[in-house]
Length: 263
Image 1 (cartoon, rainbow, N blue to C red):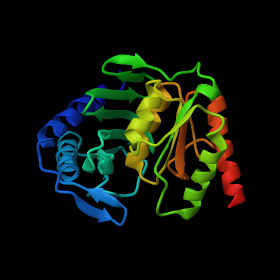
Image 2 (image 1 turned 90 degrees about the vertical axis):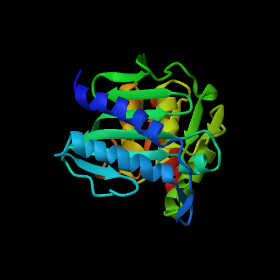
Image 3 (image 1 turned 45 degrees about the vertical axis):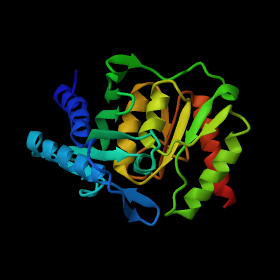
Image 4 (image 1 turned 180 degrees about the vertical axis):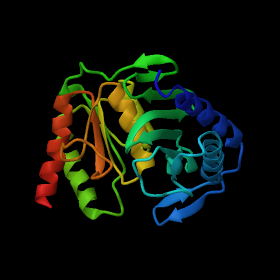
């Protein structure tokens, strides 16, 4: 398998780092006006970034708490030490750990760990997506009227994007079975890849939020694109749509396109 060393690192180190910090007191702090951070976030990032620098000293790092640097074409690791911190801090059992290796601004190996369920979801470019060692694939046979879609949190920092997401929800909710908001990108993307949901959209400018899910969904057979339907790229992105069928992807894109045209 390509990137076997990198994948073994990801699947081993994400679980090991969480085991080291899970007993820590949370010590919840206000990170920004609408966001929280805990000692678990800091502890996880310190462990994972130290291990990456030890094993891959020539590579670059982009991590949420201490190492938010611009993405380049160089080999770069993205680290989201705790995705869904607000959920975790409030006792909502929907959070995880995710990381990826990017080359030329595209993820080539990625891993997501859901510590409470024990699910380890990982992918390598061209090799498929796996859950606990078993190949997984999106649910291609779902009709739109039975589809379950998830949306990300409405962004506080960009009112136009938030309004666009509101319009998109209004556009699709009468056409699909259910809308969900998990508040955790690594669940949104993993559930699409595992066939538990049928599509998602994450509006974010953070590489660590999107890179693992992009690869995991794409390798599981999902249709992935930008909010306007164009090919997703970290050079021009506002958010990432991932759907199990092209029909659902087009439905989501129309929702955003029509929404932005009305703002």
